[in-house]
Image (cartoon, rainbow, N blue to C red; front, top):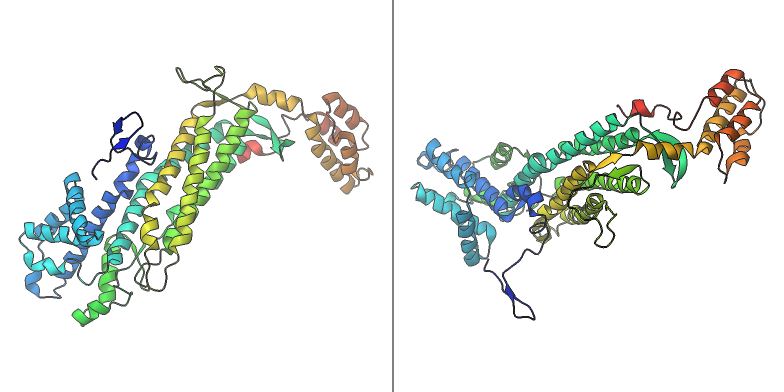
Length: 469
């Protein structure tokens, strides 16, 4: 692309600059995705598909034994995809400028490779009986599968491992819960983090089970051109062999396009993962805001441009924003790709060009949360102080023990919930307040002693064990 001059009022001219922050400010954090989800990566995959189809057809002797491609010739052809270079990217761009068609440019590129190995006799076998979508659906499946399995999933699993380790290390660290934003039954920080780890793990397992589908059945999914050209061949079997040789699952019944349902399912699963991650980011942010986590100062870093004391939780805020942008794109992709007017329209072609952007913002969020977790530490003293100031949270325990005593026939106290509600609602209770109340209860001594020994920091049930699951 020729650089475009940008003129400002002062007369200063700038060369073309990245429009997307993924290609500018955050490029170093997401650049690995460009190996799989860029335009160049898509063209590399197209070349691979074209060549594998060509080699398969030639070596099935559908057009005579003298059309056979030797192992050495096949190796040299495959090098076009394996060693796809910047020069090849430029060459394809020049060809597309003439053809005004990206897949046709790839076909001509493959023809040139046939010329290089002195197999001009196979020129017409390049892109034989294929529609552009035969090439594109397989190419997208290949690059998305690689991006998910080689970049996104490893990053997601790495974060999951970090969260699991954090959950285990903080399994027994008690803290005051907040339901509806109000003080509630205590838990442990480890158990709360373990909940997120479990939720994320479940979504990762769903994503790992993704079926990457592909078709190669012509202009309307009927093999019409193939059957007319070579009536005796088993075209569905040939198509299946090609698709499965690429590590994809064959879809035998389609229109011109592979219906993209698998893509919609994948994007919905990743969006769900993103939403759980977004929930984690907002909770960590909230714990920072009430002092349960302290932020570790980074030497030389600035929090606020005017308030020197501040350390802003920017990692988690950045993650929130990027997850929202990612999901906006994934949601649109999932909704758009499942619909095609009759046998074919091009809405999918335009929308699929943004797949890398959706993954990029998700990857950026994963990176920020992972870094953010290394920049905080738990403030046990703050959590302990909060627990010691909220003895009223034990009223749940007291009324439940009374209920158990009543059920067992060891007490006749009526409506224990209402009794504790009258004692505590809208009030702050001290240890002494509760002790005086418990001593006067008409319950057995063992139950009374159990309640007298209880404190907010001990009222965590099985939280520590749950955090280790």
